[in-house]
Image (tube, rainbow, N blue to C red):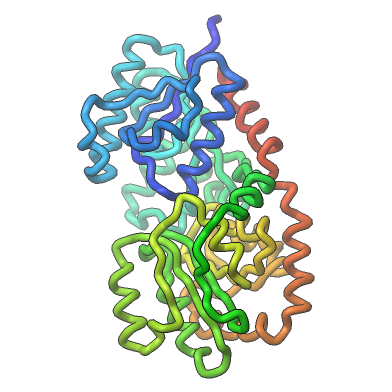
Length: 365
């Protein structure tokens, strides 16, 4: 039988870890498999994809300015059109998994889904959860990016997923970290803290800001929050109201954040849920000590259950305050913890994990 054509399905390409992994995985597969196409509405990211990849896009640009659900609908229609012409395809889905599974099962098409964030952040609606349970089990393969995530899918939906870690290119990260960037910290004697992520409820930067408010009398620090999102203005107003706006700086999202992370002493992640946060892997690759919420899923796995960094309860700003003070008073111990994490980065190696993706694709071709 003729080898299946691979169609990568990612309707809305934004600036997060999901998209970063999609670029890496898609470009790798394009060099290993004869025919790879990608369905999206996001034309502005065309240059990030291998020229071997056929981009299947809507004719007009305005779709990218609309909401996710509309983008999903447009791309599902594009997938339907392709499948009607040729059903000898395998879909690798990065977004809108349930919708895509339904369409593929109707059309009798093989599908691999990649779930990106913990079920803890999914809807608690009984009917939706029932649909998730039925449909995820209809996929030909479900991939996740942490073993804790895999366990959650099994416990909650009885889904037998396979864990493949996010591919990490340490050499590329270090190379990009040396590219020019403006100085973001002003005082060489201060504790330099950074957070990178979308400024939305999930990332919960407010917890970090509340913790910093508590330590401002005890520790001389500077903090930078890099990102964009609907809550940015609210957080800026909060820092002004509580007189810490001089200590916390907000910087818009950068395509290359590594030179910024490199300038910090510690990286703080305050999320309420994740999948496997790329930014913690990247900060570790840049030798930055990490203090993270013990959110589902990923941080605990990356930080070796607290042996490779410090963990605090989700939303516990007083607990985070204690962790920051611990780091400040125990830098040598924390350096040893950081070394533990660095030594275990090999499990996220780019080539190792990309080969696993290729293996899953080949099984279904």
